[in-house]
Length: 323
Image (cartoon, rainbow, N blue to C red):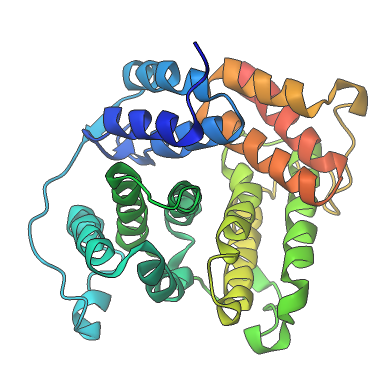
């Protein structure tokens, strides 16, 4: 039997995940839809179904919440007052399902992306990341399935519910330039600079928990996934927002054991690194962050042939095995 297509694998996975809520373990973002999509994108479509069933057993997911009240997206003061209110997550998801049904996924994306980007740091950037994985899903086919569209609505809904405005002057750091000062033709290169630096920092540092700093790589990489679907005037603000979020994460979680602040890799040795082996190792390990980082690292490596991406992915998996 041949392996299922990406869309078929994801439709089956999303169908099996419709009952789960927005969090796992009581306080962490539900990673199942994101990891399943990353696994499919890595080419392991035949492993997605089994991974989902394993995840449902191994992780403690909340139940899918029920919407309680309508959010009036036509009244800016009304919907803005609902941003960052986690108890309204189901209301936000239902709202986006309606909006996508009425206006199409792309119109909803370009309307709401700039509204949500200022709050992308909430929940360790998982609203942004889940949305980006869903965008890749709906854009992979001329006719997205209802489950794919639902997942995009839930990604946007979760993002709106955990919306947390980015601070300025993060822990004394100089504020990045304004969006108007960033040329749109250098955004791709700037994202590579950011992800490669952060990957090098991750690979060469020690930390009490292996996961938080992973998002300094996966969040900018998630922005890259979506840029092609956005107007160019949204590119620079998106880059600057994820840059600030990355700096905040480094300031909060990377102050101890920062082995190499300039991001130069020191270990593991390049001989240990092969893209195909890293992806297979992540799939076998089954950990959500290992899968997501392996996918992001593979994609970033394809843009810029920098060993730091592979070093970070390998380092995460080794740390997870010991954690």
